[in-house]
Length: 303
Image (cartoon, rainbow, N blue to C red; front, top):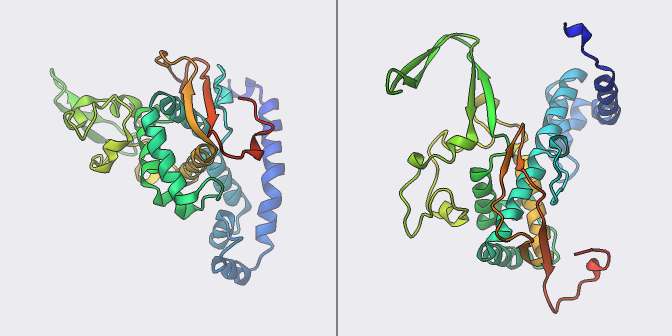
């Protein structure tokens, strides 16, 4: 039956990807091992592709690894979320959830923007070190991914016969036998919202279903209780790429705008859990520039 599945469009799209990626691969392969070694010591111009080319000269391996990173961390900034799953991706969906929560929590916007302006001012472009050093920015991204993991469901295949520690017996407290090649589905979305995995609410720890970046100041999840990028040998290789894109976008937006407001303030946005977790309805958020600040960049922006 597999031969009956139409693949003309699929092959055409693969050709488009290959036509884009292959020239960069050829450019990297034209560099000798000595030239690649020199690039590792340069401050600029050394890329992930150069690191791969130092490891292997196999064009297919280079192409597959490069595409994997591009797909894992790709971004199209869709702050108005449309109703088609193929128009969303993981980074854009997470940014949408971030600005959705920021529009409902002005106190978080105020604290986050204060950290950004103290570090960068209103104009300086953030470096990777800037993004990693802004703790409240990282807490805000982590809190978004805790409540809205980009990939809500996933599947892994058992490599050999094994057991899961719980789930069997009359009350679910006994181990469960898992045979080799058994697919095991799990949900980061469900697990990361389980109340039994969190400390009881307190003055320093908001209820677990509330959006509260401050909780990360004195709390670290236990191993495997926070897995927005999965973990182990199959952890998302685009993790740092995606986190950097999100952090950069948030910073540049809040350098320009001092307020983020929901256009439907009473709306509790329903979730649509396809391959990517995304808002189920159009997400309309308004951004307001700071009053009294010269804004030559704003001439072509429609609010």
